[in-house]
Length: 568
Image (cartoon, rainbow, N blue to C red):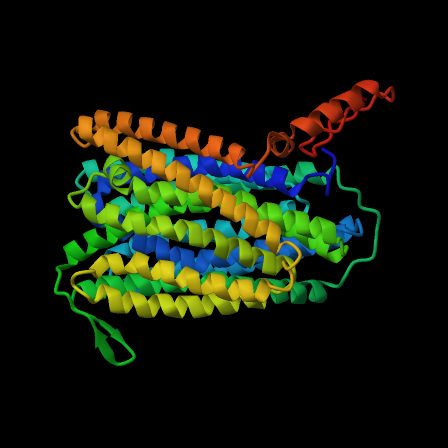
């Protein structure tokens, strides 16, 4: 395979990751739904607590490290220095391998202690099982960062799909078998997580094989490269602020877990003071935490579709910034906001309007109304998260890696304080957690936009216009969907059976999708021509024609950026 750095547009790269994200999140949602039916709310409370601890460590691998590798390789390839790109990968791989071993060891040794610290001792075994996943995550960070720096997103996409479907198949089977054999919440959660770890191992093997094949098409000509120490220094200069910023939210989630579990029971100790103490029993507190986690899992589904835009914009925007190409910068800034909000706005509005039927359909629980209430709040958070994520990634692309860290720290403090205050109020209790999340995101958006003001001043008019038109399209969709919901509720008992719930949901989603896409085209949020270009249809026709006209015997260049192999 030839190395084809720079031939893929930001939107085409984002499209590859968006497609994979769809399959990954569908698999993840099916996994959560099925596992929740096996473990019930109390078992899911254990599962989510373990994952919060894992994320505290794994965010180092999934956030700052691949961003640093991607950004450094993207900058290097502006001058077509493939020798230095390879050296950056080799140095980062050795470094990340060592860090991964330390993190995995800490999870194995201190798993029980960490579980007790957050007030959910049953999660200790699950944390130790996740140590394998954490180790693999650091190895994958170097590999994914290498491919992303080349603006080649297919290996990242496929490896994520592999992880998701192995988790779905093996993890679900283990959880069901353990619970049917009379296993506890502790064992059932650990069984589900075994599938996660095995999926991570297989994904690492795939990426290693993919890189070996990719390197065969990478020309190495002995160009001058930086020293190992200079590369390590630059890696840490970029990665540490990004990783710390991402870690802030993981730390906040762990603190959230601690506050929620303890405030719901006997009260949480914080700085020598006792906060809350609603007097709930441990099992009921676990169930409430599980319901909160279930709602948050649905929130994560549309939010994950923003990630392809943040990953894809970074190498493209970095290259344009290094080359001082103002037109390319403005074009990509505008498209990044537009396409991400085209996903976030309708998703958020749909979650707000259909929170109750969605939650009732997906989860088997005795307190669906509470879950639906939290899901509706998370619908607002979906829209806010998109703006936080995109603005933070743009700042990183412009080299302002410390700015998102500042806004994350401030937002995280706001979230922890609000969670403690709101959950302590009996009438609000667990619902205070998603409310605090929304306020936290608002604070971060305001700060990031202040930091970005000089970078987006030439694009702000176009960005605001597309956001307003997208918001109007989402509002039209929301009104139509709510009308159908009211109509169906008046003539059918949509909660009477699972079959009725599924039929009603299909009808409502069909109406929502049809109305939204019609509104998007009528309001000219996106034109048919733009859509064809995004999907690669225009470029493919040009490339096919070029390939047919040439008489050199070489294959044509596909819009995906992957050159066909030359005929021998």
